[in-house]
Amino acid sequence: MEPITSVPLPSTAAESWTWTPQDLTARLSHGRADVRAWALRRLTLFAPRETGLAAVRLLDDRSLPVQGTALTALETVNPRDLPGETLDALRAWLGDRDRLPEMRGCAQELITAIQEGRASAHVTAIPQEWVNLSAAEVLGGLRKNSSEEDSDAALAFLSARPHELRLAAPAHLARTNSETTLVVLEALQRQPYPWATDLLIGHLDALLSSELDVLTIEALEELADPASLPALIAEWRPGEPRFARVICFIAEVAGTARDLPVEIAREADQILHVQNEFFREVGASVLRGGEIPLPKIDSPRLELRCARCRRTYSYDVGEVSCAPPKKRWLGRSSDGVTPMRVIVCKKCGAVDEYEVTARTHALLTAAMMPAAMSGKMEDLPPWIRPGAIGLWDGTRVDRPSQGIRRLREQAVKRPDKVASWRRIGNFCRRVQEFDQAVEAYHKALEVDPDDIESIYGLAETFRLADRLADVMPLLERFLSLLPRAKPDRDLKFEMTVDILALLRMELKRDRRPCSLLVAWGEEESKREVTVTMSALDLREDWEGREIAQFLVEDAVTASLSDEPVKDPPILLERRLRERRRSRPPVPTSEQVSRNTPCPCGSGKKYKRCCGRSG
Image 1 (cartoon, rainbow, N blue to C red):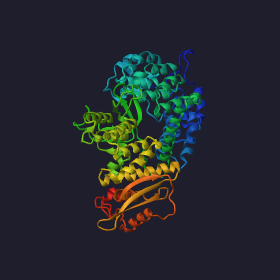
Image 2: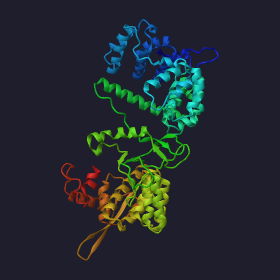
Image 3: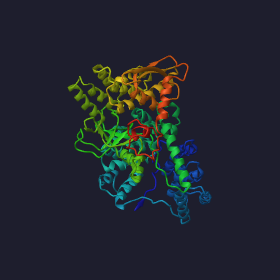
Image 4: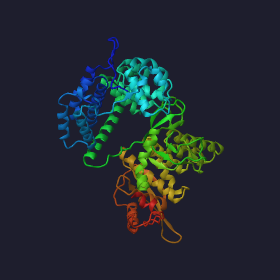
């Protein structure tokens, strides 16, 4: 067996390196921790004598990942190449009580190995019969079912024979689904020569369209060749933090970070901040003796692979529907994971033609793990919705675009039915296709101008689309139509609560006076009803649910006025206070069942009334 520990130095002076040992040593003092760790990893491959001294100096680095890289580097270096102060530095490092337990164990094993005169890490060896083989012959002998030992031996063999690797790599990079492609990728990222980057860039389109796209990006990041920046910037799309991070990292290594587009730098800073916060949280938790925390998943960005061009990108999906796939769904197949947005491929523009990647499945599994362990649906993240996407008639859809298509087919058959267009608007608003939702609501109002459900949906769509200037006319129209509207009382109540919340939001933004004018009837005898008119200053702190209940149950007419209310208290305020005093006290959620009638007297279930506001 012949041990392979590093790539040999170039045999001719004409073949230059992308980064020389002197370049790497200079970057050991870089301001960014990931650059310092990268420089030390590259030194470990190509300059073992310089590695020992550099690793000893970085043991006291303020970054935990850099300390871990320093320990790993010391494990791979031959004890003869280590500086004399290594043992003293390790013992001093262990004297600090704030070291992580796992890292302390590695340091203890390293001290023992150095004292015994051996390397702590396992050294990969190649079979003796491979010595006279070429790189092409070794790669040809690998199969998909090859053992991990064979793959590691092939990787060591190729890393030590760069000129043969250069000749054999193109044919295997073209076979993106083979076992040898993975070995060639890993061997190329261990090379110090610019041609390794050139090979990856030449096959970049095929590699990024395969299952090895993440490994390809990682290989280019490890090579950190500035020559790869134009190709990576061309591949970057807004909302692609992994490309942005790699681009900014390579630019930092090359010293050209200031020349990058602002959008790329901003995205890279965001993901770097998240990573640093997570590492700090992990370190603090371990030092306290607690468990390593799971990463927080607050923003539902998922990786999806386009079924047409095979490119993988990250998408902001809003909510995710998770349900076991069933045959009666629309569409040929389903994986049970449905983003609640129409996904348009950032590369080829294909609509909702995607596959969920293994990384996304792992992310969803981690996010749902707390709920699975506790058995409580409340522990699910707010952006995960259990169950499939269903239409009004019970049809389940695999993709939002399928639901929109199905609803449009139904509306074409019944264009004179307001509910057909309203359903399209409701579904499009749900999946955040706001332009299509506005169009559908307008068509519904052409059929029935007094349909308050469509007015409400249109106002909600403008709010979600951040078009608050278009909301106010709809609010006035909704309130004027409310007393004679057709929907049942419960639906009218819920919509009115939301409309009043929208109105308050608009008043806070506009800061103009606004009064609610209401007329209601009071029965003085069996035959006579007195109609009373009054107003309420909406800038005052009134409970929206109280006003909504009054408008739904007692109001005859309602409208908005720009005139401020004068000389309070007035009749409407008194009426609301009387209704509040006449209601029995509302018990807490521990004293009343969710499905029992609400004690406030609204006639609704507790969970849909006062329990909902709690």
